[in-house]
Image 1 (cartoon, rainbow, N blue to C red):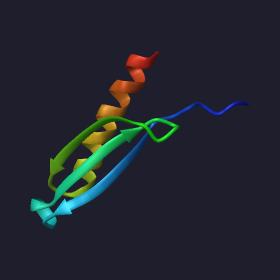
Image 2: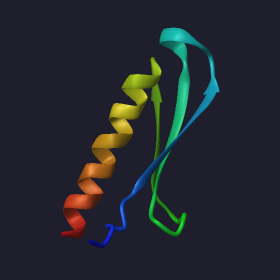
Image 3: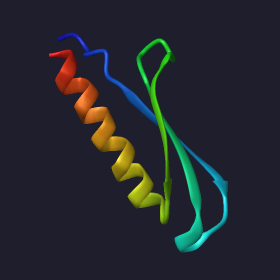
Image 4: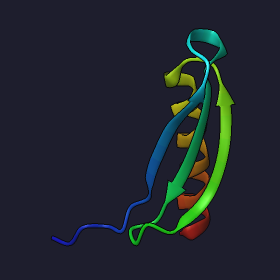
Amino acid sequence: MTQDNSLQIKLRLKGGNGPNANWHWEVLDSTGKVLKTGSAVGPEHKAFATARIAKEKLEAAGN
C-alpha cells in the first residue's frame, strides 16, 4: 500500500492569548512548499479549523 502525498498544516501563535490570540497558519505540501497562508483570531481550535477548511479545498481542487 502506498502513502498519499498529503498536505500538512503548520500553526503559529503570533500574539495575544485566549479569545484575542492571533494565529498564523500555513498549508504545506509534502516537500515543505507553502501552498496557502492565512491568519485567524481566537482560540487555537478555531484557527486550526480555518486552516483545515483551506486544506480540504486544496485537496479537492487537486482531484
